[in-house]
Length: 290
Ligand code: GUN
Image (cartoon, rainbow, N blue to C red; front, side, top):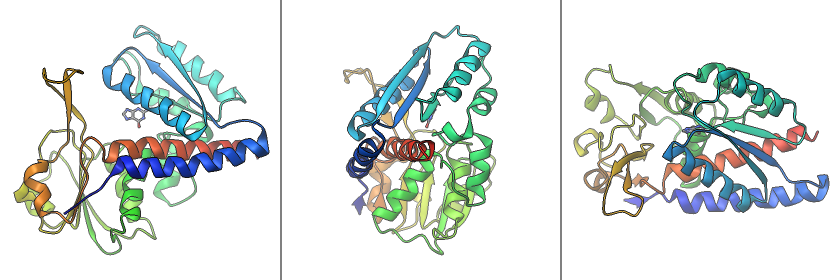
């Protein structure tokens, strides 16, 4: 069993991007600029945004965090997005999700100019990705494919089973794994899937992205499979300084001995998501400066 080290791989990718950013700086006289909009004080969102800012520093990017309180109106948020769309100093921006219940996330997502949508959540980018055209790939799926590539894990002709059909992980990952050059055979399972363990046991590459701690047990995994754990549920833990620990969707201790490769939580997919956001931002700056 080999552990897939997302932390180290993401550090490597950020170092590669930093070189590109230095060259960009030398040619254009400015750094790529990422803006993150953070609404409210959700603990997870605070952490993600702080990590995105740190990653920008590692890559030599400029970053800006724009904060709004929980009671910001949808119209106020839309007008902020409009100003970011038009701001020539902003290469790309994200609106950290989830948003408060009174704000429609779909309307917000669609308000972001596709050329600045470095999350790759806008329907235009989702559509471009699904037919294999250049676009901003959504970061978590792109990070998973990058890990498989860098660890030399064969995907062509292999059966990739994805548990979870979310718009930001399951669905876009299915389309990336199907892409020419990746060439996996893809099955997407979800809460209504019948005989789930029977299907997951066929997986050469099993991706758990449903958000249920420890959901994938040893009996669901084929001997020698690669297991990718996208889960990051916060479990209250008084013994930790933070008051919680992160739990993946895979029962790691039981599953790991059966795997050829497995990602840990934390330190697997999470850091890769941020590295892919940096890559999208680099791309946005290069496109934007043309
Ligand atoms: N919330 C959880 N993951 C993400 C992400 O990748 N981007 C944004 N904007 N919000 C998120």
